[in-house]
Image (cartoon, rainbow, N blue to C red):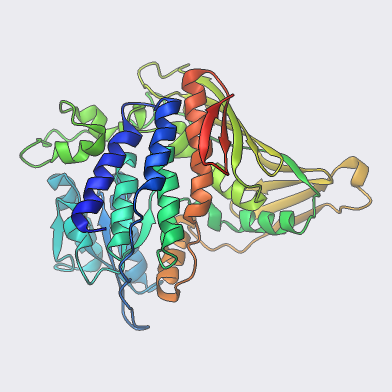
Length: 440
């Protein structure tokens, strides 16, 4: 695909896949068909990197998460934990760009960022970039990631991988068609020693057939979730902020600083708790279980405390998988007491405690076959930094991504069907063979 053809396709598919809010079932399947039938982007070769050469990284999106990545990658390089430097920044908002650049240069030194870009295509056009971090709002994840693959860049893509399911399946197809492409999704719990040990124990059959599991992500605030993202009174569309570009394929609306700063609260731009929080718990648990694709999802929830937020402040989900397993998931932004993370097997149960600990407890009838054991993994420091470093190592070694698209696509089926279920009040299914959804 030429650059022009690719951009036309991305714009068209984004419009089809996004619409406003949650798509109808018919439109979702139409968008999946369109996304999978379109010509596949061919990845440009990734630039070679010598053993003693620092990796040059660009960051697209310098809001809260993006600026956090800027500071973290720069600190990793400064501390000598990896040979890396951040050399390019991109954002539609000039005040955010300037603030991120100042924080970067305070760590990395003045003059180390040659250029920062209002249009991310300019950043991707740089031949000296080895990788790019995408920390934009969710509706830009898929088109930016595909454009980065086409430009020959390794990608660190913030979670959730995409906003809607058609985009996730499209990105999966792009990666499958380009084995040299490297996209790592920012779900850092997959590198936790506890989940890696749980994966090992499940695979070894230690607890027998895993029949069901539970997990949650719950937190609380006095005023409402995501309101800590501040609104800057100096933002002025057309002067220092490209609002039309930010709206992208979702279509331009009148300037709204609440949406710009706090888009996770709005159903058109985010799946809220489900995509922003629960993917952190579902992803590593699904990695440990290896039970295939979700095939049936039902969710419920409500606006129990935060009546202003459009997305829900309480969510409860049941996910059934093709590997004959059910996962129960709870999310809340109005109460912080969640579930223990537990994998229940026919012979025993795995309790995943925090970053390092896993405990096996036998089922009573198998107490003579399964011993109670406790495992404590190595403390590798900050999990998100560990994921960043593993991504950098994968760029050098051409190793697989530690948090791959294949896993993230399965999580996105659960996210999309749960979102649909909670808004429409029905159970929904997914067929892994046809890659289509249906109402049950």
